[in-house]
Image 1 (cartoon, rainbow, N blue to C red):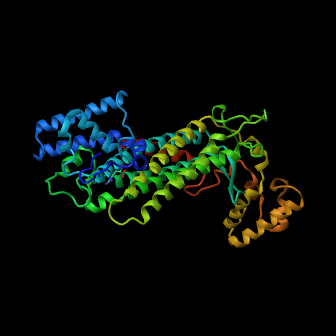
Image 2: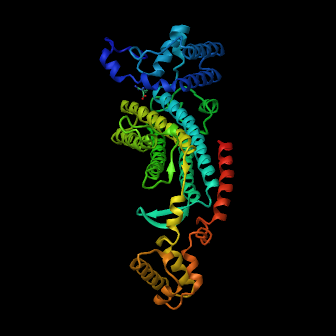
Image 3: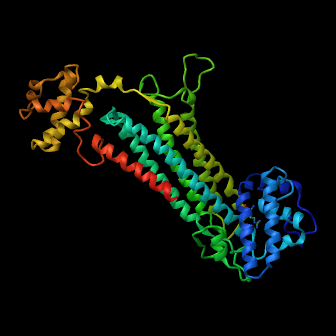
Length: 462
Ligand code: ARG
């Protein structure tokens, strides 16, 4: 135990087990060792401990790291409250009472806040690189499918034809915002609380700039009380996971419906599907379903920490130890989902052939005909009405647009000429779109090229 002077009895075994965070905050092991070395170095530079003492302390800490990495030593949750205590207790075993000097001017409150921020920063970088991989997979699909026409939906009703490339670029844009959100989270976590002590700093002349540099933080936090009671960066991290998982869940949902016999647009590869124990013909999209399903726990993790924090008076309260499990769990779930989604997408075979015949002359080309009328000077509201009548006529004739000729159109409005019939052709529907951001093939090709450059850039800078 790191404390005990004023206690006459040892903590109850069950109470220690209940309160120990070691089983999970062991994930902060590497960060904690780095923090202790940096803190000890700063203590020696400011003359609070000697250079020789720093040497012994830092060697002791490195020995602990070696012993843990080689499996020679495993911290024991039945003995220690958390990873910070476990390491300090172990240091005492190795170097004796000098270990007691390490904690000068330091509290586990600023220690845990610092280690947790370092862990969040590291994890942000990993997530960004995993998102980039997934975006690259999407761009590869887009590149092959700039002319693959599929129905675009609103309200899950056919709206207008789009391309598969356009659809996947929509997801790539969503993921770009996910990266931006994670970069913001990184910048929030990149402020160092170490040197804040338990609540109000220290009477020792700690040089926070030294530890900031050693631990590679962008700046130091401004207010010691805020520093140790702030978990906003963890909530930003959890929120990044929430929105990122929501995007993956939407894509999963599409892959699931697209692989149904009714849709028949996508076939997920065998490596990422499973069979049924009863129905021999089945191939189930379980991985996509699980990504969709696991978004639930990631949402829950956000609510869990937001609820833990909401009633806490300043400053540190032990409740805050509940911050780590949701964050670790969301990271693992999101990171695995990103990797699996990328692997799975790379195996998907798309086939729009069933749609091509049927979408030729489909009513989802109605807006193109209305636009044609607008270019002839007809007010859009009237154009909308006229095309509505064309649709009605086709329905009465039990056909789609393809079954109508110029006379049919003229029977509804004299303004029609034979160029109007071009609007009914599926081929050319993408190129007819001229606005920036539409599925026009030239725009899409350009966007893919630009996107690739952007990906290179943000991978390089992080
Ligand atoms: N295990 C604690 C946590 O994760 C470390 C800080 C404990 N501080 C304290 N004063 N008990 O929050």
